[in-house]
Length: 223
Length: 152
Image (cartoon, rainbow over all chains, first blue to last red):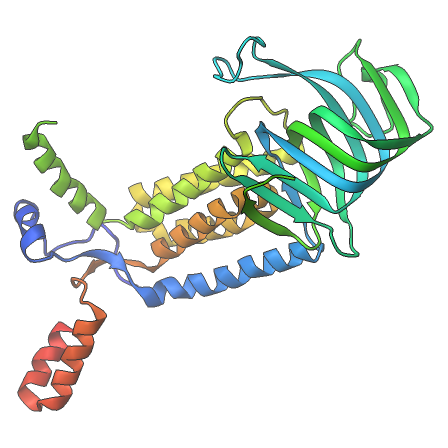
């Protein structure tokens, strides 16, 4: 170990500036071997995280927001489902507000425990799409407290024990996250099954995702 | 831009940079910003975050802080870089796969650069020049060898 960074004795302040261009002065720099001491374990740890996530052993939190993004899945099975209307507010003076007054009408869906097969999620970054795929093999994607604010939701749905027309503040089947504001139309059910799901979302509040067979990449086309 | 002040500023900045792990701190801070941006994206719609989402914001903020502190308090760089690398790896779990990997990569590279940085080093000598000098030292015996050993 050497002394602190401010310790630069052989550099009189006045002489250093012209010296810098002519003959290189003594200055701090990165020693490759010292950096490797940290870089090697860090790389191994990062690789380990990626492998564990791809095997579905580690859950991952997602909190994408702001840009509309698309989620598709061939099949979604869930227990504890609640759905209600809501308004998402844009940041003040957002250029995307247009004539909407800065608000987006969304449908909030909450699923306490969900499994999805062939999940595909894409965000349009303008020109290119960031695409995440998972659950294409035998293992399915699992998510808990999956909360999505969607503007569009299509698919073939089947519900068990559905209650339609509740006040959104009285919902109880999807846990504490699955409750909306008072006086808003809502519905809830014990289980939900949606085939050929396709959602356009504006926000996902953090749900823990387990992503077996994770593939993350950029692509010209979305989901 | 007037030339006078610019010429004064750049050597001063260069000198300031020489006294701290500049790229390490900068990359770590940028990594934190990138992860935060992927959480907030273009700020179109405000997200409602619960307790569970809090860690997703906390970790990139710690990354950003560590990066800035490495720049302005380089004496403690080892501690900051260790925290920085752990937190960067943690964002894989808490914040959109570490800002879709980009922020995580910036954070880890920045932390490693900060960790490997040492103050007050000899000017960099290119690998080829070092090898040539070593060969020259091997070819020509005693007196030159001592000189080459001093510069390399």
